[in-house]
Length: 350
Ligand SMILES: [Fe+2]
Ligand SMILES: [Fe+2]
Image (cartoon, rainbow, N blue to C red; front, side, top):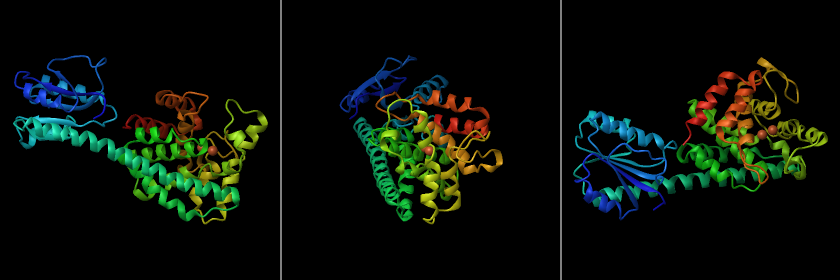
């Protein structure tokens, strides 16, 4: 079992003692029977509610504790004194992941916690590891092809669904934690953009086909960097004017590589134009306003956010809130409405 505490919320401490004793065989258990500040407590790994949820004070206490788990990862087991439809609905609304009758044997409750905590960690970790592994294979294949002259886009499709599944089932936080350990800066960046884009379009409730379109564009957007010297791509610190000029060739290089590969026109446009800005200040073509497609508008936001929050050996990543503030400060360069939605999507991550 992980480090951290099983929090047992109860409004009848005397009767919860048997349960507390069994939970202590699963892990560290803290019994809470009043309002308290959890700031200095061990991180919860599971919550067990032995409360009468029809009491306002009790439901408020559970809601407050569940809301501390912003990533929505931990199991919340509600022991129900009533199993009416209304009571079950209320428990689910409060965040219950499992509802059991209050008379359930403590040993069974302990087993449910073991299963839930273990399953949650293992499923999320394995789906993310699988997604990163598949996507890395795809990127390696594409970038190797781009260095040698041409790419075979057939391999790309195999990487899209594992990325979407990883972000949906494992959560973007876990995806980022996995991707941040990647030693190749360009691959790390493309995988970050792909994960962030997957989160954004899932949050926006796009159709599955459209979700794949955005993840495809995210994986391909910096393909032109395959032909930029590694010494420039991986240079710690600021680039000089010549190096910036070289880096800025990557959208057109990527476009030229993909043009003969059967790539669809929307994706091709995203590769060429992902550094264009709505006010016309971007590159390579200085496009502005309606000349910039929706795909590009979405991808550009994901790209900038990923660049700000990526991990490099020589600098700390920018916290999510600061990165969102940078996007906000870009004003008319980005579509304001999309930036607002993007902020909500990133704040909703688990
Ligand atoms: Fe780029
Ligand atoms: Fe990029």
